[in-house]
Picture 1 (cartoon, rainbow, N blue to C red):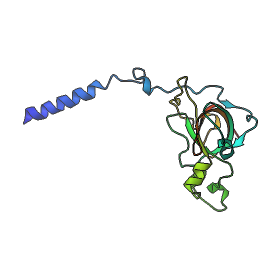
Picture 2 (cartoon, rainbow, N blue to C red):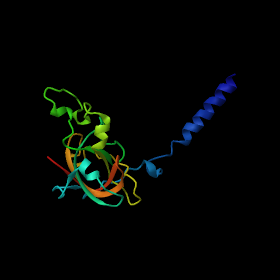
Picture 3 (tube, rainbow, N blue to C red):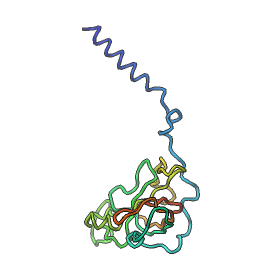
Picture 4 (cartoon, rainbow, N blue to C red):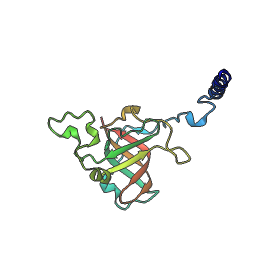
Length: 174
């Protein structure tokens, strides 16, 4: 019995030990990408449309400029990818309801999910392979839930229900 317990312990120790040499440098998937220095711009791009209006007739590769609020869910900014959700500024968020004490007013929890989806878009910052950068945007130069933003970029994908934008510029309204 002691030999069995000792054998299990040694096998477990060996398996754990095999993982010790793995670092962010030896595992390329673990390293974070750098957010482009020119991503956040100091002036709003011209001719911006609200998200729902912008969705009409867009196709992959089209240039687009949209205005929205980072929101539509409790956590609209991904923690480890350069992805965020924006919704039309006129969507009824909790901070627009007098006396509402919602801790996450940008999530628009009082609005039907289908209504939010109709007025939402996904914004991503991609690498040269078209994949979202492996770094979160939250807190970068003012990017935060509830902030109004204007996003310039190219349509990654679009249909009547979804819009994904590869951002080349993001203006964060103060």
